[in-house]
Length: 218
Image 1 (cartoon, rainbow, N blue to C red):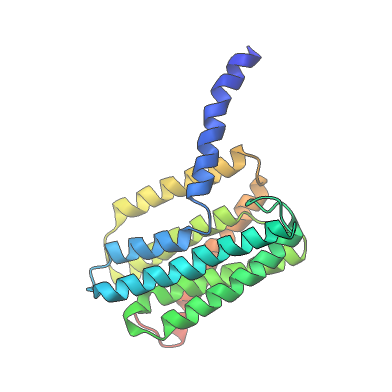
Image 2: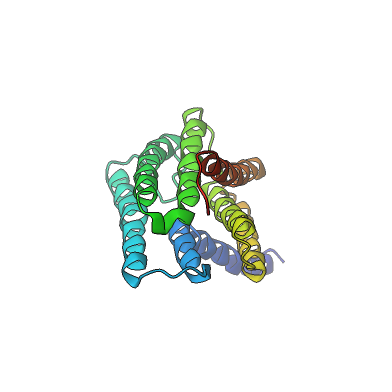
């Protein structure tokens, strides 16, 4: 009986691990940018799309992987999951700096104005994560990222009056699968997942509020 249970358990664990990697927080901002360009009715010059995609690729994906590789060499962390709270803190501080740079760069170009609250929200989320890590707390970054990207597209759809209901429905399902995978793998407690989800959502709402208070207009 136990062998049968173990047999059926393995594929679920493998699926959860694949989901956790494909929907790793490092990749979520890139997914958000690609989905934004695909869903937006605005016209963008191909060169502007390529610039943003390559910019996010280098700063938000390649640099973090290099940092992780360096951290592993220095034995600050032992895996991509960063179970060591000290490693999480150092990595979060670096990523907060990275996303502040991205936010400032995006803010300088009017054609990316709708992405300004998205990256501001990510920066605020990671800055909040730094505080949690400093006090030895580790909210789920997966939940934070999925909650953030979902909140962004919901708010963006509301303010721009763009009907993306089917996309949002799919995004919510994917987010739920990602969160379920983290819980199944016991990477986080339900409280840590809930905390990450709330932070990701709230920071996107806060970023939109700040942009509008400062006179921004989508």
